[in-house]
Amino acid sequence: RTIDGVLSHGSFNLASTTTRRSRARELEERSGDRDLDWATALERLCWQVQRAELEGVEEIRPLASYAPSAGDDAAWLWHGVPILQRHPMLLFGDGGTGKSFLSLSIAAHLAAQGVATLYCDWEFSPEEHRARLGRLCGDALPTNLLYVRCTRPLIDESGRLSRAVALHGIQYVICDSVGVAVPGRPEDAEHAAGYARALRQLGPVGSLHLAHVSKGAQDAPDPTKPFGSVFWSNLARSTWFVKRSSDEATGGGLDIGLYHRKSNTSALLPPRGLRLRFGSRVEINDLDLAGVDFGAIPRSSIERIEVTRGNSGAVLYGDGAVG
Image (cartoon, rainbow, N blue to C red; front, side):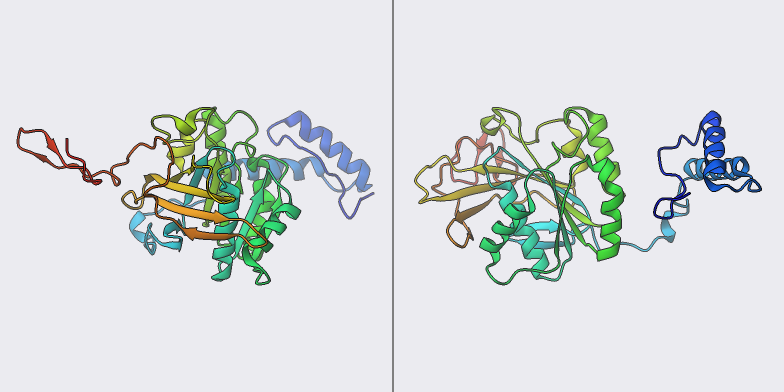
């Protein structure tokens, strides 16, 4: 007695002997096969799975036997921002700073270069993203930009997503956003760590993850990390803070500053400015940050050059100020 060829479907505790006996009786009843030793078959299955879990699926061998990678800094460029080809990146900022629009622009840019890209969405809808894609690309819509609407935490979605990555040859994944893609509070380290483990199951692909900041952190003296556990920042190889201009006279557009807050593959990069202009088409152009009011933004080491001479305490800053 099967349903779509399946004899029995449901959760199964492989460590419980009581569960094995109960399931064996059920399988024997549903199959009508009294000669098949279901109890032994399940016992063998449970032991093989548990042994594989203990031993692990990755073999242990000398590190020197592995072929070296092409380089940790391998990246595609989008408006001067390196999009890492092999590592996770984090784009974080307050709501209304255009993070989803920017990430969709990155996805379309990569797809136009032949990079198969998967957009995993926990926040919006395919119809809204399709409308945005049309405004970004016009009639030249990329066919290798795939979309999936996610309703469960990444740890539960990773199975079908990893199959999609393998089936479609996906090279880059975008997750929008991490705060909704965890089963509990983003402040808990266990959820950030579980998210990272689930991400590894997708395979050796690069990825971009969107995150928010806590209330008031947008104008905090040092907005260097997203809302939640410090592991969100620690587990990413590159993080960028998104700041919206405080100048209201932008002509119906949006001026955005991107500030490099962490990098494990290169030195910190100078801040980047972008100007978004909305109409039937959306234009994203580079913007000179000089003269644009972004409020109080702390300087990073790449934004500030300090030279101390002797004991005089003289300091020369990159913007020409001397103290």
